[in-house]
Amino acid sequence: MLRYIARRLLQIVPTLLGISIISFSLLYIFPGDPAEFIVEARYAVEPTQEMVKKIRMEMGLDRPMLVQYLDWLSKAVRGDFGKSWTEDKPVMDLILERLPASAQLFFTTFAISIAFAMLLGIISAIYKDRAVDHFCRIFSLLGISIPSFWLGLILIWIFSVQLRLLPAFGYGGIEHLILPVLTWSFSFMAIKTRFVRSCLLEALSQDYVITARAKGLPERIVVLRHALRNALIPIITYFSLSISHLIVGSIMVEVVFSWPGLGSLLVESVFKRDFPVVQALVFISGVLFVIVNLVVDILYAVIDPRIRYGD
Image (cartoon, rainbow, N blue to C red):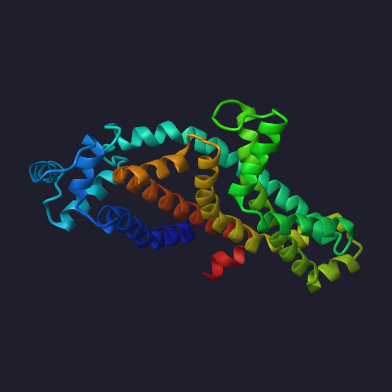
C-alpha cells in the first residue's frame, strides 16, 4: 500500500506544476498591462506612465517571466500569495476570512446530497419499475432540468417573500443555511441518484449476485455486502469528479444568496481585477481537486485490492 501511495504522489507532481503555471498566467492572459491594472485597482485613477513604471519596478513586473513565476511559486507553496490590490491586505487573510462560510455551506451540502443520493439510488434500484422508482426518476429529471440560480430565486420568493419563514440573504445561523443548501444540493443529489441506481442495477444483474441469492442469503446482505460494494468504485469515481461541480456551483449559489464565501470572493475579485486573489483561489481549488483524486485512488485500493496489485 505504501508503494502504491508513493507512486500516486509522484504522478500528481506534473499536475500540480501545470496548475501553478495556469494560475500564474492569469495575470498575463487578460489583455492589457498588469501594472495598469494594479494602478486602477489600488488608486482608482487613470494610470500615467510614471505610475505604471513605478508599480512595474515595485512589483517586480520588469523581471523575466520565468523569474517572476519561480518567485511566485516559491511563495505560493508557503501560502504567501501577496497582497490584494483593492483591500491592501494579504490574500491569504482574505481567503481565511471567507473560508468558514464556504466550508459550512460545502460540507453541509455535500453530506446531505451524498446521503440522499445513495439512499434514493439504492431504493430505486431495489424497487425497479415500481411507484417509488418512478418517483425517484421524476425527481432526478427535475433536478437535472431546473437551473440552480432559478431554483434559488423561486425558493427566496416562496419562503422569504411570501411565507416570511426564512431569510433571503446573508450569513448567520441555521436559518440562513437552509435555502442555499436546498438550492445547491437539489441538482447535485438528483444527478447522483440516477448514477447510483444505474451502477447498482448493473451489479445486481451479475452472476455472483444470482449465486448469492440461490444460496439463500437475505436480500439485505445480497444488496449491501455483495452488489453495493462492487458498485462503489464507479460511484466513488463519479462523486469525486463532482467535487469540481460543487466548487463551480458554489459561485452561483453564493452570489444568489449573498453568502460571504470563496465563490463570491472570486466573483468580486474578477470584477475588480484583483488578480492576486484570483490566482490564489484558482491555485488552491486545483490543489484541492488533485488531493481529492489522490484520496479516491487510495480508497480504490482499500475497496478492491486487485487495483493495488494490478497497477
